[in-house]
Image (tube, rainbow, N blue to C red):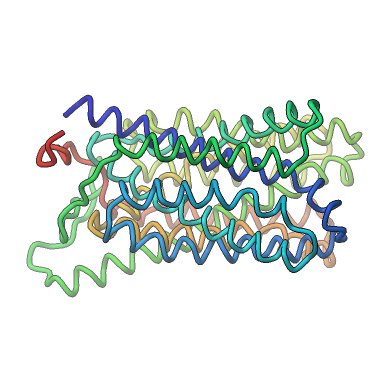
Length: 409
């Protein structure tokens, strides 16, 4: 059983890398696709919204399907579909075909995202200790891998459509090959945990099933709202960190690029450490103190007058946010293991809305205040998240168990 569980964990890492690679392959080819289709930056920005809408829809479909059919079916299926859909943007020849391609690719990617996170929840529950942040860290590894592949292919003179097709084909093979070691079982309905490690409230023994379901649904939506705020902060950092250094502090273009690099590196390092910290101090502490650290970091960015304060601020912001989303996804999945897919889809879906809205919200605020002062909104969101972290006290957390014991593994 231990070997089977280890194999399921390794396969989950593979799918997270795969998802990051597929999305990264598209991202690094955006300039080439934009030139091929012949659209302006403004038009491309509108088309990218369709990618987000497709992802949101895919999450809402794949979540319940994962609960019903099992991760062993849905995760590889969405991985295959996502790999096949990757080539579509490369084949687009006008705005309409690109719109359709992005909608389909976004739908498939969103489905893979939620189903692999739902499976990660079951792996984490079987281990009986936090492992979710490590999975999220490997998503970033996929993005780096995609950038390296794209750089090599471009240097070799390969057309974008060839590179996208090649990455997609390899991804399909990997998705199918990794499927057999995924966990086939879904926890029985009504099987929920008791509360956060280190003490917390559980639903009372005399609570009726209907009341318990309503309480669980309420907690999941609270987690979703927190995810929206955290991922809005992430989205804002992705699009505005480099511009902040360049436009506000007068850094060169090359130096400004390190703003996002500092944030992303801190996020990755934080996620590699977050599981150990969560096992020792609890998921609520990771969310509360992480959000507080992020609030300090972005405040330093907003009001710091020097480059070193900006870099320090973006590093603290990334480090603080790094463990927040994995804790929220994990808590949503453990709130009711039998509905892990549906609950994760709600939290991930609303969080994705925040990710998409973040750059736009900050952009709108720059019409009213300076860019660095617009970041005060992110400080407020971090403070609100820290205050609301107590919701994790009533969310289920991993407990040692043997989910594979009855499956013949």
